[in-house]
Amino acid sequence: MILMKSVPSWDIDAVWPEIVKYVEDTDELSRGTLTPETIRIAIRERDMQAMVAVDEDGEIIGVAVTEIMVALSGLRILNIVALAGDRFDEWRDEGDRVLRTWARDIDTPMIHMTGRRGWVKKLSPLGWKESAVLMALDLRN
Image (cartoon, rainbow, N blue to C red; front, top):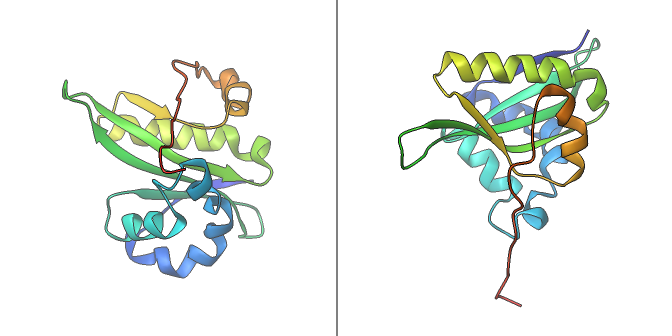
């Protein structure tokens, strides 16, 4: 059975070597707005949170990195900054259950995620809907 567990901020450095491989492409995907190192620091400083999927052997096989945002309207949103791992189909439902429960517990009635278009197919069976398309124009090049 695969479990989804929260990583305490003070413990992030100890598990980081097992997690970093799942967030190593954030720099490229975010066009430099997020890097693995900035994610690690933000988790350590409690600006972001990490939950890991752990298999029967105690091996970390996936991660969800989140942040709590407050919209200008005051609406609290649980934003999934990074979601990645191996054997996702095996921990998708558990991850969804844990994230939904946690979001309700901390009074965030909405969960957002920006990601590759392939996530629409993976998450739509859980009720997720594509609500926008993120476009970027990088003027640095």
